[in-house]
Length: 351
Ligand code: IPM
Ligand code: MG
Image (cartoon, rainbow, N blue to C red):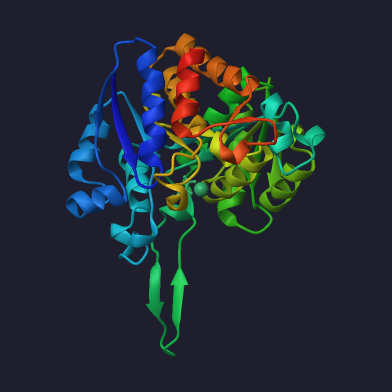
């Protein structure tokens, strides 16, 4: 099994290193190869997604991704910015289904900004469409009007086929979980969302065992902090999913805990923590590696067909939390506060 390892920028290298230690400990026939991406790709070859990196990702069975971005790249033209690397990988590899679970570990319920009783036991899965919508719709740009004023424009666009295939992913995931699917849109205002709602409803007829509901995105943003446990699986478009998944991450106490999988039609996938490159804490050995370690577990489950290995990693993470190990982002008083490397070592020891 060949894994392309793309650490990226900021804390990317530190957290990916810990996930690799965990993978090594599994003693499976895994082969890894590393390549620069994001700002590191730009520095190495003038391109955030160097051709060799894209080729490595295409040839691998799965991709382990750290994070990209840094203040030193913010002034570059858009095509050269680090974010283009992750957007390009998603598009070139057809990774249209983004799974973002938000689970509250019993030990961390107190770390949430919400009351412990509102989030205790929370287990939701946000499924975000990842290769369409206003992120990729054409035309887009900034142009000058006849009166001399500039205007910016983007195109929100979904085809029936794109909506149908992500709807199937949503219904199938719901069947394996609590059999509830909430489709989130803005059909009271947007045409794209009206089509989204119609197509999801149509697909739902093939899944009579799943209870389908529809919710407007503004209401969903509110319900997520009011009664988050009402949700099982949420399926939504690219931009709404981007926003709602960040919101959902905070229910769990720390964005440093949340893994993600981005899958193509054959379950080949890219695995990354949902947090960013956090340049302010890079190189200080304080970042939380657990989201990346849990992403490696998802990789075992979804792309490499090693569910037992996935279970082992997840159990090891639960064990270190139970033992009181905490990185700074989830630390409370009385915890064994550790750095990035020590947290990785604790997970390896638990394995
Ligand atoms: C995410 C990130 C990306 C996105 C950025 C880095 C392009 O916010 O994965 O959620 O908007 O999709
Ligand atoms: Mg985001």
